[in-house]
Image 1 (cartoon, rainbow, N blue to C red):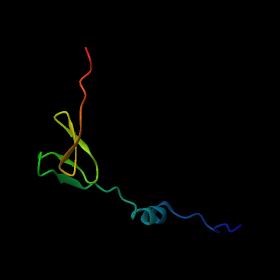
Image 2: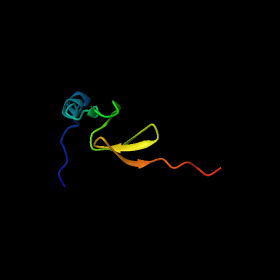
Image 3: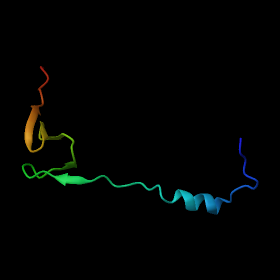
Length: 64
């Protein structure tokens, strides 16, 4: 098994790791509700579940 002859410095290690960055998620604004949401994800707005600008499901009220 190969082993390095010398220990790699922290600066050299950190320079290699700079390419891995956290990215902010892309956010869309619905034209129907005006709600900001993630792309390709359903989202709740005023008790209704929307996807692609259409109501997919409505929230059921719990029986009291």
